[in-house]
Length: 433
Picture 1 (cartoon, rainbow, N blue to C red):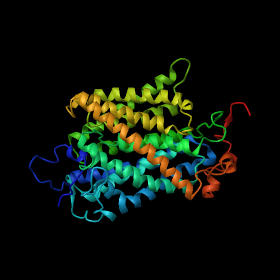
Picture 2 (cartoon, rainbow, N blue to C red; picture 1 turned 135 degrees about the vertical axis):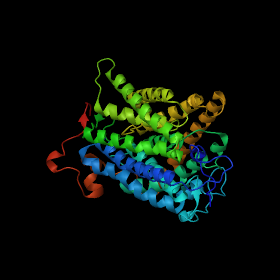
Picture 3 (tube, rainbow, N blue to C red; picture 1 turned 180 degrees about the vertical axis):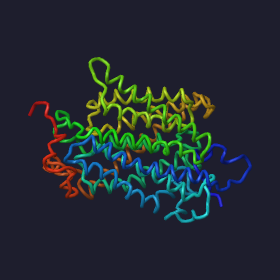
């Protein structure tokens, strides 16, 4: 039995669906997808290390826990309802049908040449890290319980509908021809915009912008970035849903674009009298990964260099101007994921011709712009409403005393470091009252 309504990435699986032939189970494709799903799962702990190293010692565990709890919250909700809201047959242009609640009806069915159970698990990993990304904007001041409640609602009411719009055969952006191979609009734009909205609603950290919270553990940042890049190979190449030519192209561009973006970021840092930093290298490669994600199987290797360079440039200068946004996006989620995601989505339309994909360039650019605007508006307005709703149930923000002394002991009764180490990463006051 074949699962209907599988997304664009399945249609593009390298030769998996021969014209006129009924799909059959491929053990090779299934093995590749099991590995890819595991690689994507690793990305969320990798993100925890990346974010954790960027925060103060007093809040490192709370920061990492926001990523880790996303695995639990979304993992269960995706099984209960998230999958069917995104990919269930019998839905409409805006939402999937409810026939797969609890993953019912997927046994012995195929999506392309792999078991639909595998496809559902692979997609669950995407939904998990999308929520985890948002946490970087609100670390060191948002209540843990409030984040969990917001995350549960966001996953079901924001992420799943967006995934349906873009990746389900019934979705309106899918039908319009929007290109998003592995999550530029669905994951990075939605998470980046939602993060910025959350930073606005919750408010800045005490002392912002006069207080600088320096990264307390740069090696953790590098470790996290390395794990993200490693897992991202499954994120992008796995989105082909087969072990073929499409996966190979996505794998190569996912190597090239982050490399170009990292070098670009270091060059911008070094301009004038600056110095190339390890945090800059880690940030640049992550930005390159974000930018290439929607385009990875739609552009040529040389075009991937351009995607990396332009994505890093746009994000770098957004970070430099972050105070003008008026929001304390603590770990620059909007600049690194929202902005790079937007750049990547638009460049997908501009460069898809390099591999013969998509509509004529002008038409495709219009389609990509519509998909970007739809994601920005839906994620932004939806997140604002959900945060206001959560605030009615429980306060979004911790008391000032807890914020100043750190989140770990208050939220989890644990410390990341012994007491004689807690001075590391303390805030630096730049002056004023």
